[in-house]
Length: 371
Image (cartoon, rainbow, N blue to C red; front, side):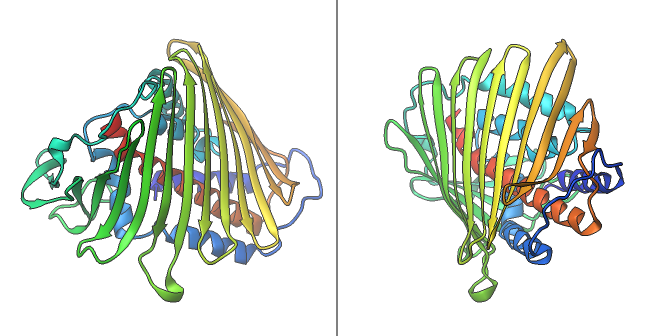
């Protein structure tokens, strides 16, 4: 999904092999590296469709400008920051600052509808002159929501390529019932005969806290043995103020008709000049559980100066496989990895990166309308 993220992960994987081992220990082995890699590729296949790629790239444009608190949390704790800290420090810091500033976005009672009812039935097409969505004069959307048409993207700009090539549409349907805001999102092909994404986002808020959740599935649109479908639930909770706040995130992803799945738990604490993040990621497969547990601390030392440090440990069925530690862009590992181990680690981290990018995309439309 995210080419720059994948390239950083691959660079980090190469570094794992090249670095001198800090210590040599007997490490557990993956029971079947080839099968594990294939299963991770099946997960990635649910996102590898023209419609989802377009939705992923254009979701941030689907609604009024917003200040997305959930998106800031996601970007701050994205897997790339827990793997290769040598380049993305500025983005990580900016996202953390944005999160602190936006904690209050949803920390208030929510009243519906999430989409102004005056917009119901509207459809929006891409304007290549303004690089933005504009209301269509010839097409309509759902009676209780809006429709955004999606297009093949230019790989350089990540905006619709010219001439426009329509690959589908996204329906945002308002299903709000006080005191919650609820948005049903459907991503379909241009003919409306194939559904790639179907999920619901719910947001609730009160003074000093908010919660957001998403539940549904993403699929590759195929049928029979070629079908790949990932069912998911994601939830966020936040409390505090702009200067001190606590946030948590939980997510599960299960590959349909298999015993393959992910679990994620994130915590974040923001206070004055220090941001701390932790992650517990678990990949379940037949007879094996692979965990990636990491923490990240960002400390502001001056108005435009920060330090970032942290560590990541990968375990197989509870036994330590490798630990990565980093500070000020310097990465160290507890041992060298073989070429095969390196490939599995890269596949694992890329799958986590894709899933986390997708979570951010899932919340974009709701955040724009709810902000």
